[in-house]
Amino acid sequence: MTTTQWFLGAVMALMITASTNAQSAPSPIADVTIVLVHGALIDGSSWRGVYDVLTKDGYRVNIVQPPLTGLGEDVAATKRVLDPQDGPVILVGHSYGGSIITVSTKLTVAAWRDKPSYAIIATEDRELDPAIARRMANRAGSKVTVLKGSHLIHISHPRAVARVIETAARAVK
Image (cartoon, rainbow, N blue to C red; front, side):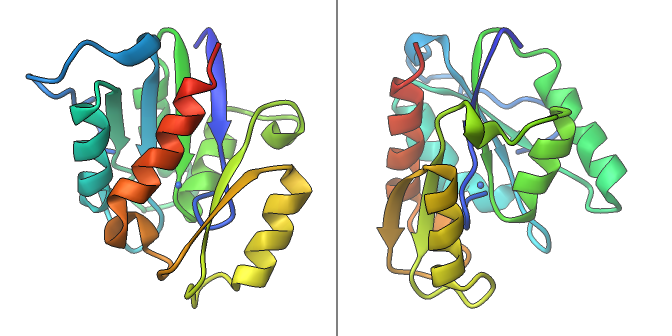
């Protein structure tokens, strides 16, 4: 990857092993590729609503399908999607997906220290206390969006989540 933009957030700390591109989508915007990585106990289909919005708006989107058989295997599945990417990439991890992204990219320093960070705080999250999510986002200097919803905010509010991702994508130089 020549440029990597991070989109790691508290709840959205926010993909099918083979890259998926919409056949009739407009040409990609600013050659940005968006890579979505799901969390534990769900699969790549959980991103369907977000994927549909992003591809309709002209973004190239890949959904990683980690097998959830262990961190090593999940990282390997993610690398199979990340390695062939050329150009700017927005990485979006939901919950455990953020950990997978962190290990997949062999970070030695937290990405939020030198890369833009965006976070979505779900006000009714019972998995990650919204107050803790807020502290994490503030510590990372994230641009925060607050949405009323549960831990699976990308399923219940795909359009709002896609808008945050698009904001990150537009910030890529």
